[in-house]
Image (cartoon, rainbow, N blue to C red; front, side):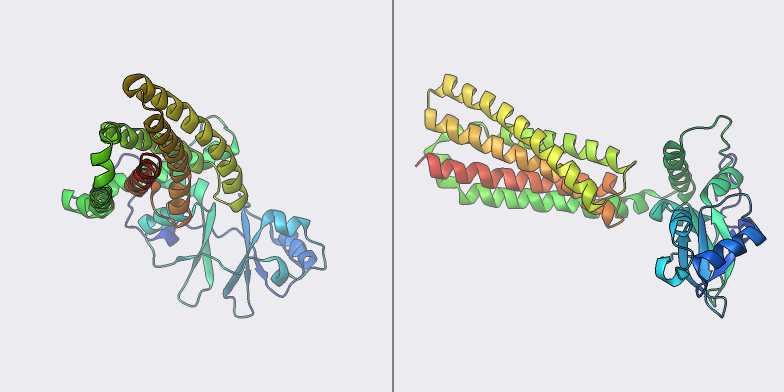
Length: 336
């Protein structure tokens, strides 16, 4: 394994770096009983989550601190705990743990043995400090620290993986096949609307502009979305808010570009129908391109796929296909 400055052995067992100074709570306790145990046993250096176990000491749930502190004292822990818990096996390596943090972006993970008994806890801040040597000399706001830690973990993972050219090819090439497929579909669409192109050559003249505008707009929207995804969880509320904002922006961009192109067509060819067909289809296709630029990275992020690699080919392919369908269909309807 290549030696990265300031990084410990990524093949070492993760249990060697796990904390033990945290209380375990019985799932049949009430919130009041749990808080009393926490007061008696203490919480160690950091408090992020509390973990619930059954009578056999097996992990059965996780209790976010806020949920535990705000619940009525008589509330059973089983009613407020999150039952779906992602845990790191005790046999995992430091590299495995890094990938858990980068993939799930949780602040801590329990470490469990084969019987799913909790044997330790990995805290992302402690983990970054001890394993990556990323100590902060000056305190910074909580959200940027969280983002920076995950970015640092991801960065070092990319360094130590040391992927070969063949490995990188296998990772990137399948997504490029989306572009090949989209190009084939676009060629079939052009052939399908061959009669429309032959009847009005001005439609063919602006074909390159239509595709270029759609790819540029979708790429802009996609880049902005990927930046937002770094600091915002993908929820329906977030997506609805982002969709409303992007839809209004898309309409303005579509109307602006469509009006300019329609004016160019009118001044050049003195053909009102062609100007309406080309300008109108550009306005519609740019609106859809903006929406694709928001929706595709958000969906990939939600599916825990890397939007930086996959979003580009998929977004551009869908934008191109949708643009040609709108462009040719509008031309056929208006330029009869």
